[in-house]
Image 1: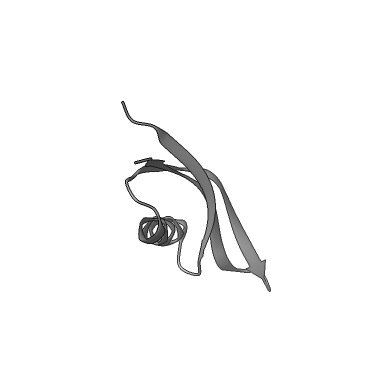
Image 2: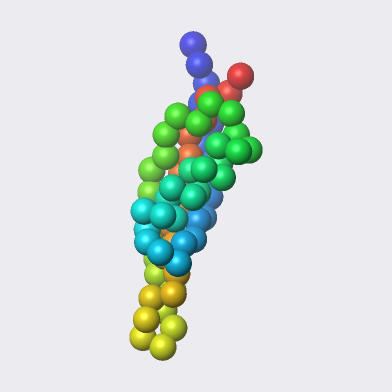
Length: 66
């Protein structure tokens, strides 16, 4: 039997939501072992002078405890 934990992280990218998600997962895997999945809890954009300057996502990352 395995036990998993879920944490929430916020990620940002100037490129896209997809890039923000991928960079968040990459960073989570550097500090957490056994990352098994993630889901997007929310998406936001930052706007300056009528243009999108940042894409932000709230991720819930699941990892299995040792």
